[in-house]
Length: 281
Image (cartoon, rainbow, N blue to C red; front, side):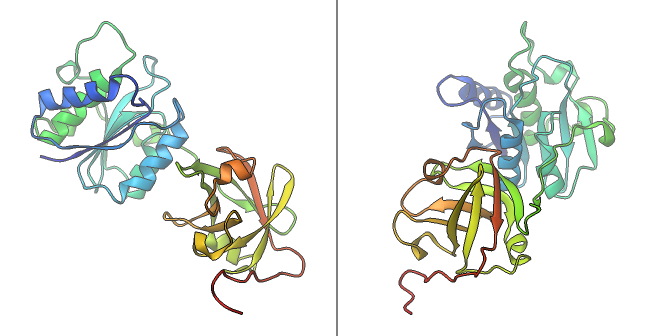
């Protein structure tokens, strides 16, 4: 039995997550299901894809069941992919692509079409229950091989997801955008520490941060406690990206930040080192 790691935008108010759990339990009672998260923005494929990519390296090998599917009921395909990590099941809308690439790519991709592995339904709006859940369950339990689910799909026909890259801002800095705002209000960007180091910056430097045309000075530090309470900062987050935060506060309240907000970092003239709190002179 392989574990199933389940991610969706279903939320927790309705019964949808529980119903998918129930379908899996009826088909494969011995399979363990790990809830990666279900409160991602509704229909936001990029947010779901990035969450799956961030998570996959920490999940046990098995089956990744991901459902963020604004195109449910349309001509978009339901797919399953086999990778060195395990299987991925979800809509062909780019949701699976970054995580599949991170674990080494897929050697087999199929379109889930065989009616034996789909629940009959008069509607076409709950493929998490009727298509993806059953497919994940039979792959996890070994009741079916991936080739049993349907015909092979040309890898070149599978929808990719283009994650935006940071680039020079034209003023000697680096321009990126907010990819994710977590539960604590910290804003992860697509800018890396290497991007800042290429500007000649290092930990302890004051950096000019531009958001929506407003320039704000912030310190580049290692930990929240390295600045005074209520102060803004940037740091390398737990996934290795530059994130904007506020000590004992929320960056998305202190600054005009939402997902996809453009953010630029520059080295201010006369670069200043910020004393680290508690570090002495």
